[in-house]
Image (cartoon, rainbow, N blue to C red):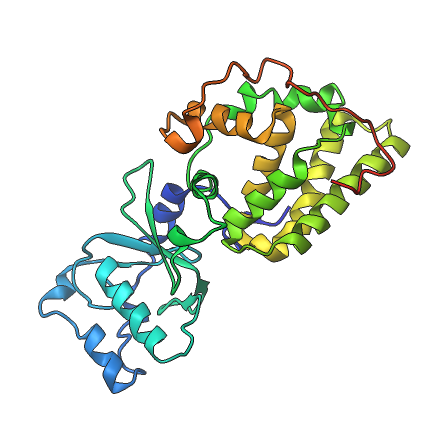
Length: 304
């Protein structure tokens, strides 16, 4: 796995916020010096703002309505960073779908704001996924999971037993659809078929190679699997790759269909998402799925 100090490992908004919110040091300022005249009005310093140890890097005043860019997690006033985004977008036609952070120049896809410890809102750069045909409530719930501590869900889903009982050798017929939705949610892109095909190929190769080296311990096979998947998705998911691997493992270990897995996950986190959780189910991680894994190492398993 990649050294955690060298990249933004996936995970949890609150820990990333705590890590980055004190990195807005005075040496990054002032930001208005290299700007065009029409951008300068966005960042005029507020008098007396120097007393704030961590001011907004744009207005230099105390931060109001904390907001963070979704990749680098630099912190700004919500109104300031939205105005900055709109100014940059007005100079391009069509407007860009990402924004370079004013501080570190990292490309970001959205602005995270309204975080209350368990939920948040997102303002997407120059696009409205709320009206998108592909970005459903289920996509939003899955993306939200990447900013939330999963707690002891791995224990509830018996992940360790999944490896010890060699269930990882079995084919999961819901994996293709789960991967497609998961990668769409994380990347916020509709066309992810190439990535899905690549990940499925890596998993299929792992299962076939595993039979040839069946003397290797389940713990070793587990680490090998996670490393292979991480390496496959890291070029596309970057800092969220580790968390993606863990989420994939949870889904596979559950043995549940996608909708049943969603309800178990949402119930575990005590969330209320009517579009997903309104249907009650008796399926729990302790039960076998309604349709268990049907085939073991089918040679035609590329057809998912």
